Amino acid sequence: QVQLVESGGGLVQAGGSLRLSCAASGRTFVIDAMGWFRQYPGKEREFVSDIGWSAGTTNYADSVKGRFTISRDKAKNTVFLQMNSLKVDDTAVYYCAANRGPRGSAWYRGGADYWGQGTQVTVSS
Image 1 (tube, rainbow, N blue to C red):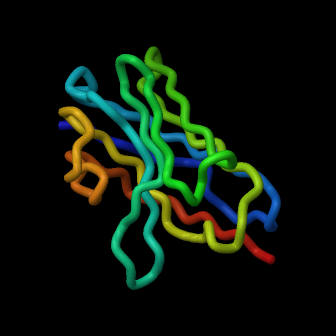
Image 2 (cartoon, rainbow, N blue to C red; image 1 turned 60 degrees about the vertical axis):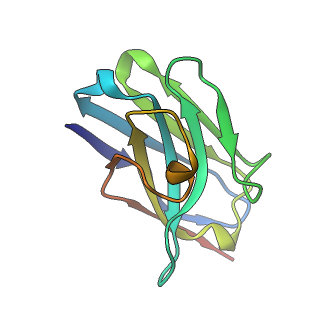
């Protein structure tokens, strides 16, 4: 099993920045990709960004391109999400995710193998 623990959420004003962290533990050698999803109240989780663990290739949702940056520290089994120019619409619970295999359609629909507990991000106007 893989355990994921997020940190770094909180309250910030619009235009501000936050940095989320997600530390993986356990059988981390099975991880092929990690990423972030977010969930609005009453909605399903939606893809935000991901990174291939080996090559470091990244993907972003159109809504966050140019504002969010995902990165990883392989030595610490940690993935980060730097969120800049935050908007009120970014307010959501953010979940860290990890996958054992390549990122496919299931992954992007929220079908990750492992999930963190979620961290609240609130952007005020």
